[in-house]
Image 1 (cartoon, rainbow over the protein chains, first blue to last red):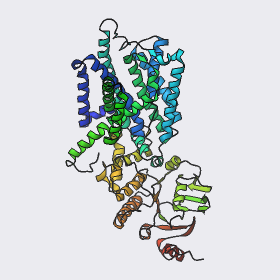
Image 2: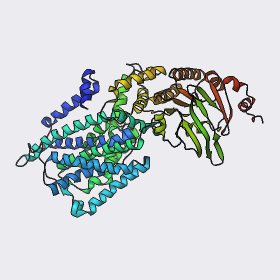
Image 3: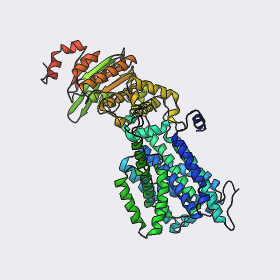
Image 4: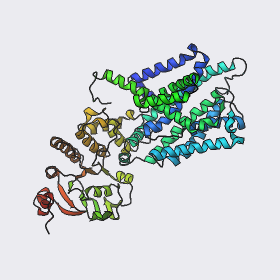
Length: 340
Length: 251
């Protein structure tokens, strides 16, 4: 990947890279402009974006709709909680060091089972597995804390260089953790960008579009779907690892199927046929849900109405709609078939 | 030199014998047309050779090697590629990416997820070359789903050709297009395939096209071979004429 980034030096900087750079600068300035609560919300938004980015590698790029991604998010969160309970170190780097391999193993195992099927059968399998994990979290209460869940205190960051005890600890934690999550988010976006624009990413899109033709190019379809599942689960699990120190508590709610539905909603909201769709969806959904919960006790009804409106009015999501608008505006500016 | 040979190849669907003990031979470098009415067994034969279907019995030899039990991937690696009767493309991918994916697959590079596809200069150069050969360079950035039918037919062939096969099966490359487009498609396909020294087997219904472009013509009827010869020999064959006119063969 480093070689790829170095190779970019010889090419003209595309407008999308300039826009991405501007977004990063804007995000970096946020803590100096808004209050702690808004910063905290934005951290949740960035984490939701990482989860949706992973989910969309399956939906948008491989054509597999998972109804069970809560399992990977929740296992990531519970892994951190178990580390706190049984291993002791309250270091974010330690959580990542242990959590990411756990997510890789879990996703590899569940993916191996699920990618043998496609369409509705794949969706039902992912849903069933996530519900099994949810049931285990509820029933094995002496391990998981049952419906009460497990507490996770604020960890230190950067190998103990930053710790957050004492007065104003929470505020300092939020500001520091924001930049920490932002850095991880940027790495995730770059990684996913390279994956989906790599030959492997093109192969996934080929499999999504036309499985028979992909087979007649000699592509190992089941293996590539499995690798995509593995990567997808790891991204979503990483989001769970980042989420639980911010939330301070993990409960079986994050393993329940409705949480999987929120991840699907997020991708639909932003637009699953665009790279940036899940990112925008993750951030917008976080604010939308927060606003809905604060506004009415019927917040689920409000979100449901938004979802119905979304499907009917903006089937390509926010980014898809903006992209089409941009294309219409640029329609007369260039010839149709330039070489890429 | 014989490139492909089938021995007593059989495939039956219920009571219908789609391939009834076929002994089919394709010689290296020839442009062979497989003709016959609908249901004659042409596509089934191609499906059996390309591993889209498994035969009930019989043997398939490619370059002297028995490939009867080989998988699709193994047959592609051996040098067999095909296009499809109903255009089969990656519709959301650009025309460029349709070809590039084929080149990446042939080069065994599709597992690479750490390098941007557009930065592979060798693949890019070869993809542009294939697009140029098939007259699709001007449509490189257009999604395949947005092409006209004639262009889609050409791209379908180009995707298979980009695998650099030794034997290329083209299943009705001109179906569903205008007479004018048929000529253009076949001129292009014939020129590229012959220029690349690729052996081609074309399933085709339009006999004008068949007579004009083929080195050899094999006619099928009800799962068996009815005639095999040069265009002139086939023109003179009364059984073929009867079938083409809708009457049963003589004898």
